[in-house]
Image (cartoon, rainbow, N blue to C red; front, side, top):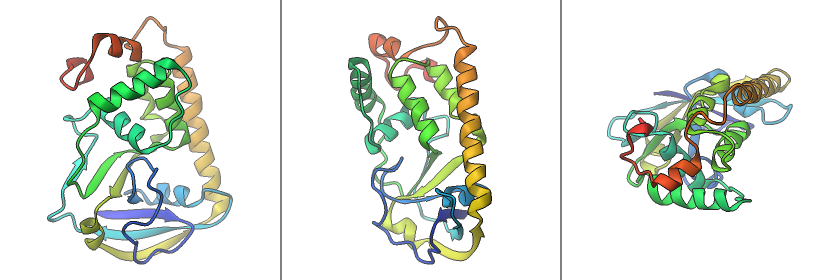
Amino acid sequence: MVLFHGSKNIIVKPVYGAGNPMNDYGLGLYCTENIELAKEWACTENRNGYANQYELDVEGLAVCRLLEPEYHILNWLAVLLRNREFATSTRLSREAKEYILSTFLPDLDGYDVIIGYRADDSYFRFAKSFLNGSISLQQLSRAMKLGNLGEQVVLVSEKAFSHLTFSRYEEADGSIYWGKRETRDSAARKQFDMMVDSTSVSDGIYILDILREKWNNDEPRLR
């Protein structure tokens, strides 16, 4: 796989164990197959950054693809809730968080690479809206495709890091890519608000339905 990692630094040799353990999929190297997205991620402020390019030899690596049919949106949400800080301000959101973690958290032990949705601030907001009962399961699934944010590829094991080879880097102009990042984020939020406003609250399945009916991973409505 050809991967790109957006950063404020040129990173020739990523260090296993470095970084923020409270990212979407825990501690790891977060990459994308899209260089333009990497450049946006590199410009977290209006300053220049770098898209570091690597080649990942996946031969012999255990790869978990959370977007494959064997997984569903609540599996992804459970992983997100395990790793990221999430303030539960209501009894419903607290019970929802506990239930999703206890029922839908997939076993990712033993995997070297995880591929799944990326949850920046707007997408994390969508997840919180679902747990608070503000949007339905169907709306959450549609929301994750707003803004064309794409997938992220995360190297989570020391073995995966040893299969990674640096190729080159490209500079990302902050005056361009910070604006692109903000535009993409704003468009996703606007599309989300329009989707919510155009859908009746009587349509769809909400977290309270899932709790009351005690859904599990075999629930056919998750497929």
